[in-house]
Image 1 (cartoon, rainbow, N blue to C red):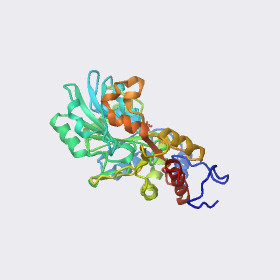
Image 2: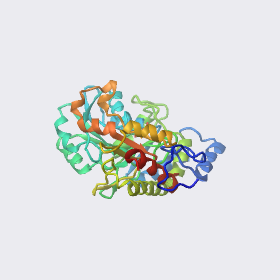
Image 3: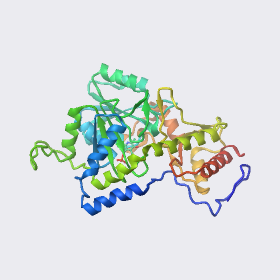
Image 4: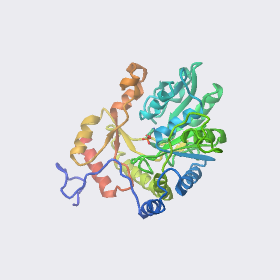
Length: 384
Ligand SMILES: *Cc1c(COP(=O)(O)O)cnc(C)c1O
Protein backbone atom coordinates (compact mmCIF):
# COMPACT_ATOMS: atom_id res chain seq x y z
CA UNK A 1 0.00 0.00 0.00
CA UNK A 2 1.33 3.40 -0.97
CA UNK A 3 1.21 6.18 1.57
CA UNK A 4 1.61 9.86 0.94
CA UNK A 5 3.32 11.83 3.67
CA UNK A 6 0.29 13.97 4.52
CA UNK A 7 -2.14 11.06 4.75
CA UNK A 8 -3.28 10.48 8.32
CA UNK A 9 -3.54 6.79 8.96
CA UNK A 10 -5.85 5.86 11.80
CA UNK A 11 -5.27 2.14 11.52
CA UNK A 12 -2.48 -0.12 10.40
CA UNK A 13 -2.90 -0.87 6.71
CA UNK A 14 -3.98 -4.48 6.41
CA UNK A 15 -1.16 -5.31 4.07
CA UNK A 16 1.46 -4.04 6.48
CA UNK A 17 3.23 -6.51 8.72
CA UNK A 18 4.12 -5.53 12.27
CA UNK A 19 7.50 -3.86 12.42
CA UNK A 20 9.63 -5.44 15.13
CA UNK A 21 12.14 -3.44 17.12
CA UNK A 22 14.91 -5.96 16.41
CA UNK A 23 15.34 -8.90 14.08
CA UNK A 24 18.16 -11.36 13.43
CA UNK A 25 19.16 -11.64 9.78
CA UNK A 26 20.71 -14.77 8.29
CA UNK A 27 21.77 -15.95 4.88
CA UNK A 28 22.68 -19.37 3.49
CA UNK A 29 26.05 -19.43 5.29
CA UNK A 30 24.62 -19.90 8.78
CA UNK A 31 22.68 -22.96 7.60
CA UNK A 32 25.67 -24.36 5.76
CA UNK A 33 27.94 -24.10 8.82
CA UNK A 34 25.32 -25.43 11.25
CA UNK A 35 24.66 -28.30 8.87
CA UNK A 36 28.36 -29.10 8.93
CA UNK A 37 28.26 -29.35 12.73
CA UNK A 38 25.36 -31.77 12.44
CA UNK A 39 26.90 -34.00 9.82
CA UNK A 40 30.30 -34.11 11.53
CA UNK A 41 28.77 -34.56 15.01
CA UNK A 42 30.73 -31.62 16.45
CA UNK A 43 27.81 -29.95 18.18
CA UNK A 44 29.18 -29.41 21.67
CA UNK A 45 32.01 -27.24 22.95
CA UNK A 46 34.84 -28.60 20.81
CA UNK A 47 35.07 -28.15 17.06
CA UNK A 48 36.52 -26.04 14.29
CA UNK A 49 34.14 -23.08 14.51
CA UNK A 50 34.96 -22.05 18.08
CA UNK A 51 38.57 -21.24 17.39
CA UNK A 52 37.68 -19.78 14.01
CA UNK A 53 35.10 -17.48 15.58
CA UNK A 54 37.51 -16.43 18.34
CA UNK A 55 40.29 -15.67 15.85
CA UNK A 56 37.92 -13.80 13.55
CA UNK A 57 36.44 -11.77 16.37
CA UNK A 58 39.88 -10.91 17.77
CA UNK A 59 40.81 -9.63 14.32
CA UNK A 60 37.58 -7.64 14.04
CA UNK A 61 38.23 -5.93 17.39
CA UNK A 62 42.01 -5.63 16.83
CA UNK A 63 42.61 -7.55 20.07
CA UNK A 64 45.31 -10.18 20.67
CA UNK A 65 42.89 -12.65 22.25
CA UNK A 66 39.19 -13.45 22.21
CA UNK A 67 37.53 -15.96 24.55
CA UNK A 68 34.15 -17.27 23.40
CA UNK A 69 31.59 -18.13 26.04
CA UNK A 70 27.94 -18.92 26.52
CA UNK A 71 26.49 -15.41 26.70
CA UNK A 72 27.34 -11.77 27.32
CA UNK A 73 26.57 -11.99 31.03
CA UNK A 74 29.06 -14.78 31.70
CA UNK A 75 31.56 -12.90 29.51
CA UNK A 76 31.37 -10.08 32.07
CA UNK A 77 31.60 -12.60 34.93
CA UNK A 78 34.73 -14.17 33.40
CA UNK A 79 36.30 -10.72 33.10
CA UNK A 80 35.68 -9.90 36.77
CA UNK A 81 36.88 -13.35 37.87
CA UNK A 82 40.09 -12.84 35.91
CA UNK A 83 40.65 -9.62 37.86
CA UNK A 84 40.00 -11.44 41.13
CA UNK A 85 36.96 -9.37 42.13
CA UNK A 86 35.69 -10.76 45.41
CA UNK A 87 33.73 -10.13 48.61
CA UNK A 88 34.24 -6.65 50.02
CA UNK A 89 35.32 -5.13 46.71
CA UNK A 90 33.55 -2.33 44.92
CA UNK A 91 33.20 -1.93 41.16
CA UNK A 92 32.03 1.27 39.49
CA UNK A 93 29.11 0.75 37.09
CA UNK A 94 26.91 3.19 35.14
CA UNK A 95 23.42 3.70 36.55
CA UNK A 96 21.86 3.50 33.09
CA UNK A 97 22.57 0.06 31.65
CA UNK A 98 21.19 -3.43 31.22
CA UNK A 99 20.94 -5.22 34.57
CA UNK A 100 23.66 -7.79 33.71
CA UNK A 101 26.39 -5.16 34.11
CA UNK A 102 25.48 -4.77 37.79
CA UNK A 103 24.50 -8.38 38.50
CA UNK A 104 27.91 -9.81 37.60
CA UNK A 105 29.51 -7.66 40.32
CA UNK A 106 27.09 -9.30 42.77
CA UNK A 107 27.98 -12.78 41.43
CA UNK A 108 31.51 -12.08 42.71
CA UNK A 109 30.18 -11.08 46.13
CA UNK A 110 31.24 -7.48 45.47
CA UNK A 111 29.19 -4.25 45.42
CA UNK A 112 28.35 -2.23 42.31
CA UNK A 113 28.74 1.51 42.91
CA UNK A 114 26.64 3.47 40.45
CA UNK A 115 27.49 6.66 38.61
CA UNK A 116 24.97 8.96 36.91
CA UNK A 117 25.01 9.30 33.12
CA UNK A 118 25.92 12.10 30.72
CA UNK A 119 23.01 14.12 29.40
CA UNK A 120 23.98 13.78 25.74
CA UNK A 121 25.56 10.33 25.25
CA UNK A 122 23.67 8.66 28.17
CA UNK A 123 26.95 6.89 28.94
CA UNK A 124 28.63 6.91 32.36
CA UNK A 125 29.42 10.48 33.44
CA UNK A 126 33.19 10.30 33.30
CA UNK A 127 33.57 13.47 35.41
CA UNK A 128 31.58 11.88 38.23
CA UNK A 129 33.61 8.65 38.49
CA UNK A 130 36.41 9.87 40.73
CA UNK A 131 34.18 10.96 43.61
CA UNK A 132 32.84 7.37 43.85
CA UNK A 133 36.26 5.80 44.29
CA UNK A 134 37.01 4.42 47.78
CA UNK A 135 39.84 2.23 49.11
CA UNK A 136 37.63 -0.77 48.26
CA UNK A 137 37.25 0.11 44.56
CA UNK A 138 38.85 -2.48 42.27
CA UNK A 139 37.74 -1.39 38.86
CA UNK A 140 35.38 0.38 36.51
CA UNK A 141 32.92 -1.17 34.06
CA UNK A 142 31.93 1.23 31.31
CA UNK A 143 29.10 0.45 28.87
CA UNK A 144 29.07 1.75 25.30
CA UNK A 145 25.32 2.26 25.55
CA UNK A 146 23.27 1.55 22.42
CA UNK A 147 26.56 1.58 20.50
CA UNK A 148 27.75 5.09 21.47
CA UNK A 149 31.42 5.05 22.49
CA UNK A 150 32.42 6.10 26.00
CA UNK A 151 35.13 8.77 26.10
CA UNK A 152 37.83 6.25 27.08
CA UNK A 153 40.94 8.45 27.55
CA UNK A 154 39.76 10.16 30.75
CA UNK A 155 38.48 6.80 32.07
CA UNK A 156 41.88 5.20 31.47
CA UNK A 157 43.62 8.17 33.14
CA UNK A 158 41.45 7.83 36.28
CA UNK A 159 42.02 4.05 36.30
CA UNK A 160 45.78 4.50 36.05
CA UNK A 161 45.88 7.12 38.79
CA UNK A 162 43.97 4.85 41.21
CA UNK A 163 45.32 1.46 39.98
CA UNK A 164 41.91 0.22 38.84
CA UNK A 165 41.01 -2.17 36.03
CA UNK A 166 38.72 -1.13 33.20
CA UNK A 167 36.24 -3.54 31.62
CA UNK A 168 34.31 -2.34 28.59
CA UNK A 169 30.83 -3.82 28.33
CA UNK A 170 30.58 -3.68 24.55
CA UNK A 171 27.54 -5.99 24.34
CA UNK A 172 25.80 -3.38 22.19
CA UNK A 173 28.86 -2.02 20.43
CA UNK A 174 30.14 -4.40 17.73
CA UNK A 175 31.74 -2.05 15.24
CA UNK A 176 31.86 0.98 17.56
CA UNK A 177 35.17 2.82 17.38
CA UNK A 178 36.87 5.24 19.74
CA UNK A 179 39.43 7.51 18.07
CA UNK A 180 39.61 5.02 15.21
CA UNK A 181 40.11 1.96 17.43
CA UNK A 182 37.46 -0.74 17.91
CA UNK A 183 36.11 -0.68 21.47
CA UNK A 184 36.71 -3.71 23.68
CA UNK A 185 40.47 -4.00 24.00
CA UNK A 186 41.00 -0.33 24.85
CA UNK A 187 40.54 -1.14 28.54
CA UNK A 188 41.91 -4.32 30.15
CA UNK A 189 39.09 -6.44 28.74
CA UNK A 190 35.95 -5.92 26.70
CA UNK A 191 32.87 -8.11 26.58
CA UNK A 192 30.41 -8.73 23.78
CA UNK A 193 26.99 -10.40 23.55
CA UNK A 194 25.53 -12.33 20.63
CA UNK A 195 21.98 -12.53 21.94
CA UNK A 196 19.26 -12.66 19.26
CA UNK A 197 18.74 -8.90 19.18
CA UNK A 198 22.40 -7.86 19.14
CA UNK A 199 24.26 -6.64 16.04
CA UNK A 200 25.45 -10.11 15.18
CA UNK A 201 23.98 -13.11 16.92
CA UNK A 202 24.63 -16.73 17.81
CA UNK A 203 21.25 -17.16 19.54
CA UNK A 204 22.88 -16.87 22.94
CA UNK A 205 26.58 -16.18 23.03
CA UNK A 206 29.37 -14.00 24.33
CA UNK A 207 33.02 -13.07 23.92
CA UNK A 208 35.72 -11.39 25.97
CA UNK A 209 38.55 -9.66 24.13
CA UNK A 210 41.85 -8.66 25.72
CA UNK A 211 45.43 -7.85 24.83
CA UNK A 212 46.65 -9.52 28.02
CA UNK A 213 47.96 -13.08 27.71
CA UNK A 214 47.53 -13.64 31.47
CA UNK A 215 43.91 -12.55 31.53
CA UNK A 216 43.27 -14.66 28.43
CA UNK A 217 44.67 -17.81 30.13
CA UNK A 218 42.77 -17.11 33.32
CA UNK A 219 39.46 -16.77 31.48
CA UNK A 220 40.05 -19.93 29.43
CA UNK A 221 40.64 -21.84 32.65
CA UNK A 222 37.58 -20.40 34.41
CA UNK A 223 35.39 -21.05 31.36
CA UNK A 224 36.29 -24.74 31.35
CA UNK A 225 35.62 -25.79 34.98
CA UNK A 226 39.20 -24.91 35.89
CA UNK A 227 40.56 -27.92 34.03
CA UNK A 228 44.32 -27.88 33.55
CA UNK A 229 45.21 -27.29 29.88
CA UNK A 230 48.10 -29.75 30.32
CA UNK A 231 46.35 -32.58 32.13
CA UNK A 232 42.81 -33.63 31.23
CA UNK A 233 40.37 -34.01 34.12
CA UNK A 234 42.78 -32.36 36.52
CA UNK A 235 41.40 -29.30 38.30
CA UNK A 236 43.64 -26.89 40.20
CA UNK A 237 40.97 -24.26 40.72
CA UNK A 238 37.18 -24.03 40.85
CA UNK A 239 35.84 -22.94 37.48
CA UNK A 240 32.57 -22.79 35.62
CA UNK A 241 31.06 -24.34 32.53
CA UNK A 242 30.77 -21.15 30.48
CA UNK A 243 31.78 -22.73 27.16
CA UNK A 244 30.30 -21.74 23.81
CA UNK A 245 29.09 -24.58 21.60
CA UNK A 246 30.40 -25.27 18.11
CA UNK A 247 26.80 -24.76 16.91
CA UNK A 248 26.75 -21.24 18.32
CA UNK A 249 30.19 -20.53 16.89
CA UNK A 250 29.11 -21.83 13.46
CA UNK A 251 26.35 -19.22 13.39
CA UNK A 252 28.83 -16.67 14.72
CA UNK A 253 31.36 -17.34 11.96
CA UNK A 254 28.73 -16.81 9.30
CA UNK A 255 27.42 -13.65 10.99
CA UNK A 256 30.94 -12.29 11.34
CA UNK A 257 31.59 -12.76 7.63
CA UNK A 258 28.66 -10.39 7.02
CA UNK A 259 29.31 -7.94 9.86
CA UNK A 260 30.23 -5.03 7.58
CA UNK A 261 26.86 -5.45 5.86
CA UNK A 262 25.05 -5.50 9.22
CA UNK A 263 26.85 -2.35 10.33
CA UNK A 264 26.29 -0.53 7.06
CA UNK A 265 22.57 -1.29 7.11
CA UNK A 266 22.25 0.00 10.66
CA UNK A 267 24.00 3.21 9.73
CA UNK A 268 21.63 3.63 6.79
CA UNK A 269 18.66 3.12 9.12
CA UNK A 270 20.08 5.67 11.58
CA UNK A 271 20.77 8.19 8.80
CA UNK A 272 17.23 7.81 7.58
CA UNK A 273 15.76 8.43 11.06
CA UNK A 274 18.07 11.39 11.55
CA UNK A 275 17.06 12.93 8.25
CA UNK A 276 13.33 12.42 8.70
CA UNK A 277 13.15 13.41 12.38
CA UNK A 278 15.63 16.29 12.41
CA UNK A 279 13.01 19.03 12.25
CA UNK A 280 11.25 18.00 15.47
CA UNK A 281 13.84 19.21 18.03
CA UNK A 282 11.22 20.48 20.51
CA UNK A 283 9.56 17.06 20.52
CA UNK A 284 12.50 14.67 20.16
CA UNK A 285 16.17 14.57 21.08
CA UNK A 286 18.14 12.36 18.69
CA UNK A 287 21.25 10.37 19.69
CA UNK A 288 24.52 12.30 19.44
CA UNK A 289 27.66 11.29 17.62
CA UNK A 290 30.72 12.69 19.31
CA UNK A 291 33.84 13.67 17.41
CA UNK A 292 35.90 11.10 19.37
CA UNK A 293 34.14 8.04 17.98
CA UNK A 294 31.70 6.20 15.76
CA UNK A 295 28.28 5.10 16.93
CA UNK A 296 27.28 1.66 15.64
CA UNK A 297 23.52 2.16 16.22
CA UNK A 298 22.69 -1.08 17.93
CA UNK A 299 19.48 0.83 18.62
CA UNK A 300 18.36 4.22 17.40
CA UNK A 301 17.09 5.64 20.68
CA UNK A 302 15.43 9.03 21.09
CA UNK A 303 14.24 11.11 24.05
CA UNK A 304 10.69 12.44 24.07
CA UNK A 305 10.77 16.11 25.15
CA UNK A 306 8.33 18.56 26.74
CA UNK A 307 7.49 19.88 23.29
CA UNK A 308 5.88 16.61 22.22
CA UNK A 309 2.09 16.33 22.26
CA UNK A 310 2.39 12.97 24.01
CA UNK A 311 4.82 11.57 26.56
CA UNK A 312 7.10 8.58 26.06
CA UNK A 313 4.73 5.89 27.34
CA UNK A 314 1.79 7.22 25.34
CA UNK A 315 3.94 7.46 22.20
CA UNK A 316 4.95 3.82 22.62
CA UNK A 317 1.31 2.80 23.09
CA UNK A 318 0.20 4.69 19.99
CA UNK A 319 3.03 3.31 17.86
CA UNK A 320 2.14 -0.18 19.04
CA UNK A 321 -1.39 0.39 17.73
CA UNK A 322 0.18 1.46 14.43
CA UNK A 323 1.94 -1.91 14.28
CA UNK A 324 5.33 -0.51 15.29
CA UNK A 325 7.15 -2.19 18.14
CA UNK A 326 9.43 -0.03 20.30
CA UNK A 327 11.15 -0.48 23.62
CA UNK A 328 11.72 1.80 26.56
CA UNK A 329 15.27 2.85 27.31
CA UNK A 330 16.75 0.93 30.27
CA UNK A 331 15.32 1.73 33.69
CA UNK A 332 18.12 3.23 35.78
CA UNK A 333 19.53 0.80 38.33
CA UNK A 334 18.39 2.88 41.34
CA UNK A 335 14.77 2.09 40.39
CA UNK A 336 15.30 -1.69 40.60
CA UNK A 337 14.48 -3.34 43.92
CA UNK A 338 17.87 -5.13 44.27
CA UNK A 339 19.75 -1.85 43.77
CA UNK A 340 17.25 0.66 45.19
CA UNK A 341 18.71 4.06 46.05
CA UNK A 342 17.49 7.64 46.29
CA UNK A 343 16.49 9.07 42.91
CA UNK A 344 18.12 12.43 43.74
CA UNK A 345 21.54 10.83 43.30
CA UNK A 346 20.92 10.06 39.62
CA UNK A 347 18.97 13.01 38.17
CA UNK A 348 20.20 12.57 34.59
CA UNK A 349 19.59 8.81 34.44
CA UNK A 350 16.19 9.45 36.03
CA UNK A 351 15.19 11.90 33.32
CA UNK A 352 16.64 9.93 30.41
CA UNK A 353 15.19 6.69 31.80
CA UNK A 354 11.64 8.00 31.70
CA UNK A 355 11.92 9.77 28.31
CA UNK A 356 13.95 7.37 26.16
CA UNK A 357 12.52 5.03 23.58
CA UNK A 358 14.32 2.78 21.11
CA UNK A 359 12.88 2.73 17.60
CA UNK A 360 13.02 -0.34 15.34
CA UNK A 361 16.67 -0.74 14.30
CA UNK A 362 17.79 -3.69 12.21
CA UNK A 363 19.04 -4.57 8.77
CA UNK A 364 15.66 -5.78 7.52
CA UNK A 365 13.99 -2.36 7.56
CA UNK A 366 13.10 -0.94 4.15
CA UNK A 367 12.91 2.77 3.38
CA UNK A 368 9.14 2.34 3.18
CA UNK A 369 9.07 1.05 6.78
CA UNK A 370 11.23 3.94 7.96
CA UNK A 371 9.03 6.57 6.27
CA UNK A 372 5.97 4.97 7.82
CA UNK A 373 7.53 4.95 11.33
CA UNK A 374 8.65 8.58 11.03
CA UNK A 375 5.31 9.67 9.64
CA UNK A 376 3.52 8.11 12.64
CA UNK A 377 5.98 9.64 15.12
CA UNK A 378 5.53 13.04 13.55
CA UNK A 379 1.76 12.68 13.75
CA UNK A 380 1.72 11.63 17.41
CA UNK A 381 4.34 14.11 18.60
CA UNK A 382 3.32 17.12 16.51
CA UNK A 383 -0.11 16.38 15.12
CA UNK A 384 1.04 17.01 11.58
C1 LIG B 1 22.87 -7.88 26.15
C2 LIG B 1 23.70 -7.22 27.20
C3 LIG B 1 24.41 -7.94 28.18
C4 LIG B 1 24.22 -9.41 28.42
O1 LIG B 1 24.35 -10.21 27.35
P1 LIG B 1 23.55 -11.62 27.30
O2 LIG B 1 24.17 -12.25 26.11
O3 LIG B 1 22.11 -11.30 27.15
O4 LIG B 1 23.85 -12.35 28.56
C5 LIG B 1 25.24 -7.26 29.04
N1 LIG B 1 25.36 -5.94 28.99
C6 LIG B 1 24.69 -5.19 28.10
C7 LIG B 1 24.90 -3.72 28.09
C8 LIG B 1 23.82 -5.81 27.19
O5 LIG B 1 23.14 -5.06 26.32
